[in-house]
Structures are given as C-alpha cells and as structure tokens.
Amino acid sequence: MKDVAARFAIGSGVVTVEPFTGPAGHINASYVVRSPRGRFFLQRLNTEVFRDHPRLMENVARVTKHLAGPLHLVPAHDGASYVADDQGGVWRMYAYIENGVPVLGAPSGRDVGRAAGAFGAFQRALADLPGPRLHETIPHFHDTPRRLEALERAVESDTAARAARVRAEIDQIRACRHVAPLLVDAAARGAVPERVVHNDAKLANVLFDRASGEALCVVDLDTVMPGLALYDFGDLVRSMATRAAEDERDLGRVRLEPELFESVACGYIAATRDLLTQAERDLLVPAAQVIVYEQAVRFLIDHLEGDRYYRVARPGHNLDRCRTQLALLDALRAGERALQQIVTHM
Ligand code: GN1
Ligand code: MG
Image (cartoon, rainbow, N blue to C red; front, side, top):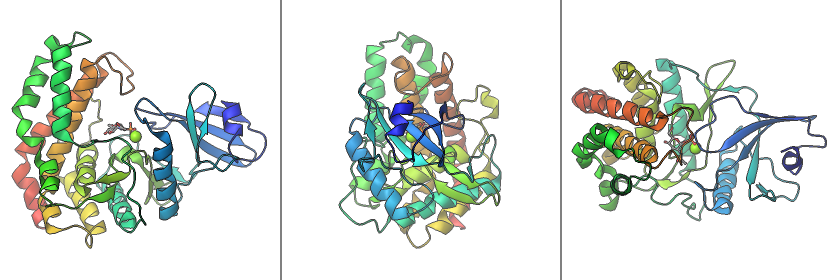
C-alpha cells in the first residue's frame, strides 16, 4: 500500500498507511496516509460495484473541480486521477480534510438541517456544471421497479437458501409495491427534471466544521450523476429523520421524528428555493417512501444473495438493515399526512 501511496503527488517519503476509522461506507476500502506533507485519504475502489472506474473518476474530477471546495483529488505523479496496481486494484487519493468531522451517533435537529442544506447547495452548485452529461456510474441506480424485479429473481433463485426465513419481509415489500414506480414514472412523464444529483445523500456523507459545527462539504461522489433531486431528498429523510442507526436491531427505536423531518425539509428547501419546481416539491414526501422502500429491497436482495454487495460485520447484518428500512417505511406511510402538512406550510 505504501508503494501505491507513493505513486500519488504527496511529496517524497510516505510515512504510514492506516485503515480509516471513521464512517467508511459499505463499498470501498479507505485508508489514511501520512507523509511529510501532511495527511491524505486513500481509497481502493470496489470495482465489482463500480465497473467503469475511468468514467467514474472522470465524473469525480469534473465535479470536485467545479465545486472548488475542500474536497479535492490528489493526482498521481503521471497526472492521472487514479492509480491501478498490478493486482487489478484501483486507487484514488483526496487531500485529508483536517477540520472536517462526521456526526457520530444520533443527530440533532441543527445537524440534520445543516446537512440537508449542504446537499441542497450541492445540487444548486452543480446545476451549471458545463457539459457533457456526466457518466452513469451505475446504470439504473434508482430505478426502484427494476430493483424490485431483481428482488423477485433473488427470491426465485434463493442462492443462499435464506428465502424461507424472510417471508415476512418479502410479503411486506410485495404489499407496498405500488410505492416503487412513483419517481421513475414522474420522470418518464417529464413531470420532474433530470439534474446532477448525489444519489447517496445520507448524513454519513457530510463533513462538519470541527470548530463551528457548520456543514463543510458533501463527500462520497461515486454516484454523482444525472438523476432526480427527489432521490437525494429521499435519502436525506431516510438517514436523518430518525435517530436510529441504519442497522439498529431494536426496531422499537426506529421511529420517525417529525421535528427532525421538519429540520431536514427546511434545510433542503431553503437551499434549493430557486431550483426546485412545484412538481418536485409536491413529490418530496412520496420520495422519502420510495427511497426507503428501495433501500429495503436492496438490503434484502443482498441478504438473499449471501451478502456479496454491502460489507457486513455480523451474520444477518443486511437483514437487520432491511428491517430498519421497513420499519421506517411503515412510519413514513402512517405519518404521510402530517409530513405533507409540514412541507406544504414551508
Ligand atoms: C452504499 O458507499 P456507501 O456505503 O456510502 C450504497 C448506497 C446506499 C448506502 C446505504 C454505490 O453507500 O446506494 O444507499 O450504502 N452505495 C452504492 O447506506 O451502492
Ligand atoms: Mg458510496
């Protein structure tokens, strides 16, 4: 790994490479590199998930350059935005954001308002990204009906022999199948515009300024690509309108907190006031249901397929994650009118 790090423009003499201990995500592997020039954030891309890394890195380079914020790539000595090692590994490096910290544990209303504002500002800042259209790093990423079809195939083939024990979850997902097409249908009718969006707009992907607590920047740009603003809003609610962790085992703790929802909606709407159309605003509350539903489907697929996509730390981890999403979906459906009221009066 030191050899890999030394191929980036970080001055001479890599001192240490250590695993990153912060919220590292479920997909890539992250490390902290220390050189005489300071600290750097090194990542090995999961090339099973991201099958076209040259295009992905082209997106990341264009987006970070346009944003001109604290998140910036450190190029390789040859000027490339990534390094390929001789074992097929693909690596990239960012400057380490020393004053940036994530929110660990349950977020406050102020945190989530700021984080939602950061994603709103991100969408607004990328509205004038010069062409061409960004690459789709994972095609059909938020095509929820297609995800549902993939689940039915996973149930059918049942490769890890787990389907019999998750009948309740399968049934619950099937019973809510009307939720799946709400966003893709709106897009197909031309009711809502395509925009450059983050596509993984969760709380863990925001860094806050250590001193002021203000949101500093949005990170994890692997899925920045054309999509709907509503995909991001859905993920904001999914990750911030509850105090429960994504993998909470005690479902009694997976509650929807209306005041957190209000802070999320308020932060996002304030940041996108001159961007969002009325049709988008009208779909904010349904969007949260769609994205939570989709995430439940995705976690259950991975459980059924033997945990091949998301990193897991314990047996049944993806099933636990699926269950939190289903509990949140229930709460979102039960609270739909109240949430709609909150958004309408903003
Ligand atoms: C994955 O990279 P990470 O862990 O932040 C996933 C998202 C999911 C998220 C759930 C490329 O994101 O789509 O919403 O986990 N990313 C990819 O926490 O699949
Ligand atoms: Mg990610």
